[in-house]
Image: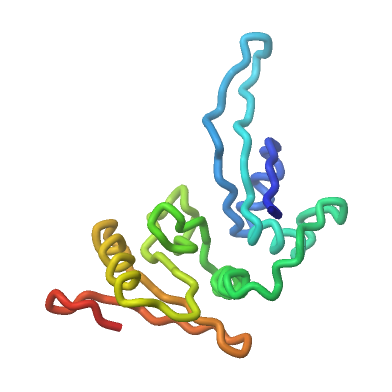
Amino acid sequence: NGSILFTSLTLYKTFTTSRLTPTSLGTPCTSQYQSHQLSPPFLLCPYSTHLAYTLSLLPPSLSPLSLSPSPAYQVFRHLHSSGFYITSGLKYGGDFLVYRGSPHAFHSEVIVKVVEQVGVRELVALQRVAAAAKKKLRLAFVEADQVRFVQVEIADGEVGV
């Protein structure tokens, strides 16, 4: 699917220095047969993998699938080029969580959901989850290769944009 699974701490540091945030799939462990700590496996999502390849952080042998036409990739690229750190927003019903700094030092403030159109029920459900998590909800639209955001807020018990 375009993701990369790796255990190299050097590669992890290279990615995080470039504001690409791999997900740890476990905790460091110590082998009973070795005197040093082993790295947990890390997963780099398809969008981060594609951007890492574009930034020449990956060798050509690890060339990812082409993700350029995807609206979600365009939003991911826009947020990254704006200086934000981005992780998966799946657990909150969104596409991305956006951080002002490293996810290890900051909490995400925004859930981004990439949409072409959105129904009222989905909008209300997403906003309730965002409010319960104390996060802002931003809908991202891609029109003619331009990324636009709309922030959704609750005003006097009503969902508004």
